[in-house]
Structures are given as C-alpha cells and as structure tokens.
Length: 124
Image 1 (tube, rainbow, N blue to C red):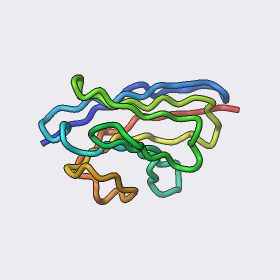
Image 2 (image 1 turned 135 degrees about the vertical axis):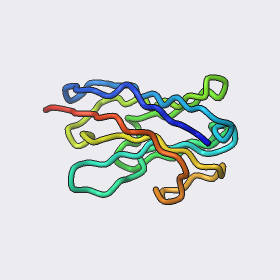
Image 3 (image 1 turned 90 degrees about the horizontal axis):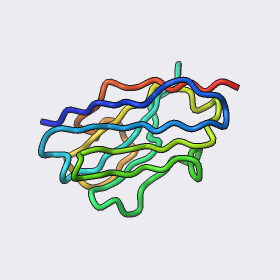
C-alpha cells in the first residue's frame, strides 16, 4: 500500500513559481512511476508530468514543457514538481499519483494510488 501526501500549493501571480512536493509511504514507491496530474474546474484530469524510477526521460504535457520540472528523491520517497513562469491557465487542483509499473502512462485509470490534491491558483 502507498499513501501520498501533497504540499506546496497556493496562490501566486502570473509569472511566479511554486514547488509541489509529494511524500510517499510504502514499498511500491521504490519501483514504480510517479506522476503529477491536474484538474481544472469543468475539465478532465490531465497528466502534467511523470517520472519513472530512475528519473530518466521524464514526460511533460505540451502546455508545461520548458516551465515545469519533475524530479524524485527515492531516498526521501518524495516527488517534486517545480513550476515556473506560471500562467492563469495553470490554475487547477494538482494530484500526485503512483503506479506499481515503472512505465509512464497518461491514463489516470492506470495509476494505483492518489494523493488528496493541492490547489494552485494563478492570478493575472
């Protein structure tokens, strides 16, 4: 079993930065892929960024490429999402997710564990 707890959300002006953290517990963290999803009001949940166990070749959604960086510290069982140059359209609830497989997928249904979410609000 894996439990995920996100932190770091908040309100920021456009152009600002935030760093989200996702602290995990449980053995499954040490073998599977991790992802950050977001869900804006009235929209479907989308994969923002994902990373596998080794941290190589992370995935980024087109809308965040060049602005967001995902990383993980396996010793601390923590995944981070550094968000720079934030835009109002980045406003959403952000969720950390984990899966037992080390393969990255965009499909929320294929992630086994989810955090409770943290809200990010970017004002213009």
